[in-house]
Every structure is written in structure tokens, then in C-alpha cells.
Image 1: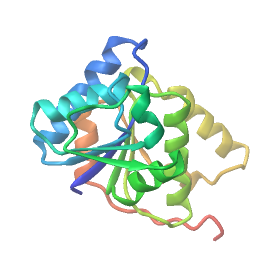
Image 2 (image 1 turned 45 degrees about the vertical axis):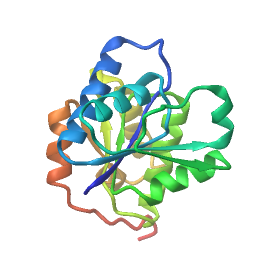
Image 3 (image 1 turned 60 degrees about the vertical axis):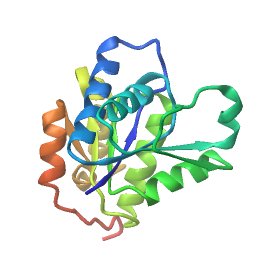
Image 4 (image 1 turned 180 degrees about the vertical axis):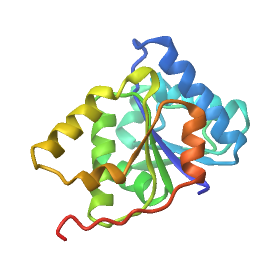
Length: 188
């Protein structure tokens, strides 16, 4: 797996530990020779990952809808910038050009990105690893919600095999290295 997509917040009002962990992750991805695809933002978790990747002279591919250009929110030092017409096209580019997904702390946009790649995997559209980076237990409530949906019969317990949870950077790399695809047909 050479190309990793990182999803995360664009907020600057979050706990510094989320930003520091994201920058460290960006550095580590670059040191491991991974290309990083991300939403091209210069703020929040996205910006921190970008700073980490570029500090280690890694390959950073930003993907942005054109309407963000005038908003002055995009990184300036990406190795490559890809512009799309819509947010949908932005996500599609990131999904189609990534071999793994890391879900860092984020808000509604990050939740949407996670659930989209998870749904696509459930429907057999890809078999790439999806790793939730549960820094400081940020995703504990989301994981509880997933388990509640399973216990109430809205989802199969097998859904939990379509993604993994890592509490540390080291766990992320271990899971990437040891990943074995789990194919799941929701209708069987």
C-alpha cells in the first residue's frame, strides 16, 4: 500500500493533541514512503498532516473543489493539487486513488467520508483498509453507536471486520502491514 488517504478536521479550535498527533502521523507516513492524499486544507488536522508530510519531503496530493480556491483555505506546498468541480468528485478522486484510508478526528465532513468508504467497502466496491485513528478516545462514542446498531439488528456484526481502530500511530502502521482483506456481502 503506497497511497494512503487521510480524512480529518479542518478546525483550528480543537485540542492541540489532535493537531500534534496528525502532524506526527504525516511525518511517519512520509518516512514510510507513503504518498498521502487528503482534502487539501491548510487548517486543522488536514493542515497538520500536510505539515508533517512536507517536513519529511514526502509526496502530498491535495484534492479540492475549485470553489475553495477563493476561500484561501488550501495548502500551498502540496506535491500535486487536483481540482474538481464538486465535493462529490473530490471524494471520488480520493477514494479511487487510495489504497488505504485513515480516519483522524473530525466533524461532519470526516464522518461522511468515513461512512462513504465503509459503505463502499460493504458493497464490495473496494477492499482497502479503513483505520479509525482513535486519538484520545475521540471515536469511542461512534464505535459504541456502531455496536448499538449491530445489537439492534440494523447491521451485521461482520461490519466491524470492515474497519479497524488504532489508538496509536504505531497501531496504524501495524494494521497497515498486517492487513488482510475481508470481503463481505451484506445480502448473504
